[in-house]
Length: 305
Image 1: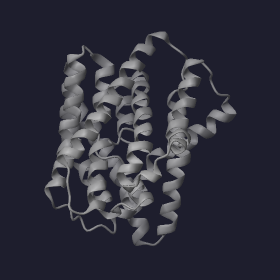
Image 2: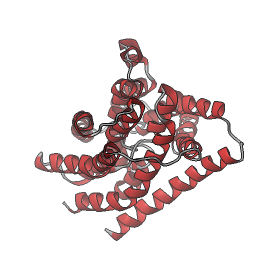
Image 3: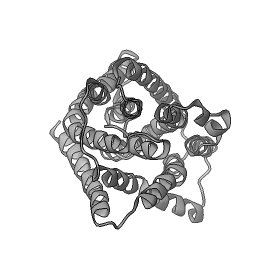
């Protein structure tokens, strides 16, 4: 348990240093609003697909197929349940605030925060299952997530769903894995370099927006969103998988993904689709701080089961 607390705490410190860099960049005017908008687009459309493809670059193993299917199903169920509870529990009179709060309750920081923990605690198998969770995350993100943040169904069309970077990256990654295709180094290396930007760039965006935020998080909906994201959602994942007989690496990998704080995409989607960017930055930052307490406890329980 103490090792888990230390590992999670260390990762949170790393994230907040990166957030600090973003805040400093705003204060010193190194970055502008236009630059942040460009970074957001770059992460969503270039970096994210590279992360997914890189995660599936491993030799095909039939023993992993069952785990992949179970993790995929667990991730789908988790997001569906999150969406239902977010609409039941999270309310705000301001539509822009409500969109951000519900979005943050549904989507966890399963890429930037969870993957490093899965690697340290569970090794390559943990990352593989984590990547599967991220694949579902991206599919839901670019469908429900776009609608939830923008509030406009016109932003979600069959063409956009199929051709969005999250879905395309997932399809390419899974096909390469199932066919045991390893990309040549000259192609894999650029993908690896771009995937490495998956953590620093979003945190810089969060920090930049946080520098202008007033931390006005008041309202029952805000606290219900944080409670659900940090405690209820991971406990539902833990209890559901345990009752289904899932144990070991697969159980812990899914719980780590579900227990992460609000996704950094909360701020990036607020930036792109007209949400409350200041609220989103504060929401992501505060849940990240609180996760240093909640994640070790819940993940520790999953590892002991």
